[in-house]
Image (cartoon, rainbow over all chains, first blue to last red):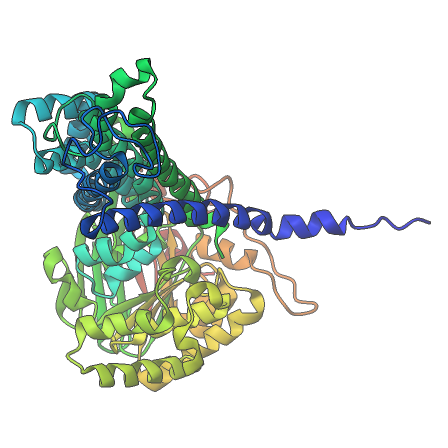
Length: 293
Length: 327
């Protein structure tokens, strides 16, 4: 008589749910994402104390100098050093998008937590308002507002964070709303926690996974909108070494063979948004509770 | 309705005419708790038993205001819990605490044992950090854990250990009464006995009163002093455990007790069988809730919901039919 063999291999993999296979992959994306982002931050900080030339001064080269030893990334139409401008641009693009994300994250999550925990009419009113607002495309809204209220870094940051708030609000609200009747929330109330402590001390830390994962997606979006506003000539001053406006300044050169003026800022934007997306992907993998423990 | 004093001695927890009605679609009303009276004396255990859907957990949650009761009064040692403005509830939770059914769900996954136990102390008592740390260590040892467990998170503990943490949290601020909401039903059979033993031990040492919610009659017989049997939102019989288990009077109590297995060779018992399923609690008629299922139903059973009738020795039953007819 044959004894049926237990398919040991299948059993083991089903007992330990593919964690062993998935984890290295998320860490791989996480490491590359963090690595690229760290490089950008380092460059932005370095540009505060050192750039090869002054990024704001035109006429250092003759204009449209091809990449060479003296100008590794060439010069633009006005003869300003591209490498110096690119380094200084990291400050603007990174600083604007990260600040906007931080504001949107804080404000959106706070309002969303309140709405989700208390529910009721205020919750419904907030949600409806957010839905109306989200019917507008984010970039279009940002363009209109910046055009209306005027240029300047502060305005750009505020508009970007305003565009981001609804997403954080909805994510946090959904998580808190689903969890507010969980037993540990009830247990927290019975321990004597006031409602705000139940919501922020007990529920929020258990709900931040999706919010944090979204943060990097939102950062990528903010970086793109920042560059788009710069490209369209909205938002920052004309000589600001912002990557989007640098692309715009190099547009004409692309047709006549001076590709480097638009290419390198474009590459910088791509690298930055790419690293944010990698981070977001890895974070949503890691914070998914089904893949922990 | 005439109220029957069911308690022995002075009640630490008094529940009077508690109601909970949930609105359902179509303007109908689901009557989950329909006029419940309970008394729990200091240091005693009152078991509230009934099948799923009888409303026993709803009673527990209404008492501590985890859900808002629709009506009635609850007092703890003379102080009102129902009605009471929500803002003042926190103070009440020094007197009354709860152990939840599922220790896995009732512990915050991101707080370790020390944080779980420190929180009630910080919120309720004016103690220094060192005093709180001492109390936390004391609590951990009271429930049979060691200080080594303090830094563990819930997922690093076994089910029994988690429930011990849940118990330690409930007794942290020295309450008068603890509501035990099926504290062992989500645990392995092998650790149930230990947890019940711990609860009995703590009751003796601390003089706690328990309101023990359960559907497990054997456990109830083992731990409770008195029992109240619930059916569809109402208490149908109440009395000392020994009396009710030896001589159940209400047809529902008889059916419930006769359905429990007997762990004794050769003992046969006659099953009391009820017809059909538990009735709907939506828009119930003003009649005995058991009327469609009861083998002893009389025409009078449909004329008004019977209230509890005192049989003496703190035993009371909500069935005029069995009271009039000697068994």
